[in-house]
Image 1 (cartoon, rainbow, N blue to C red):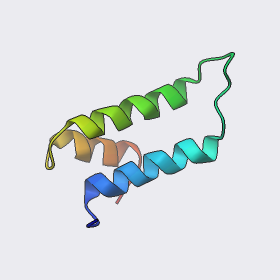
Image 2: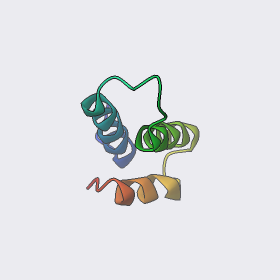
Image 3: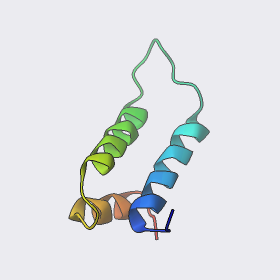
Image 4: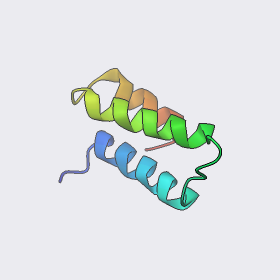
Length: 62
C-alpha cells in the first residue's frame, strides 16, 4: 500500500485506539468514540477529500 495521507491518518487512529487498550464496558469513553467516528468518516470519503486533511491536522499527522 502506498504511503498516502489517508493511510497515515488511518494508521495513527488505529495506533491510538490500540494504545488506549480495552474499552471500559461500563463507561463511554468520549475520546474513543471520537476516534472511531473519525475512522468511519475516513473510510467513507474518496481519496483527496478535504476531510482527510482536516483529520490529519486534528491528529497531527504529517
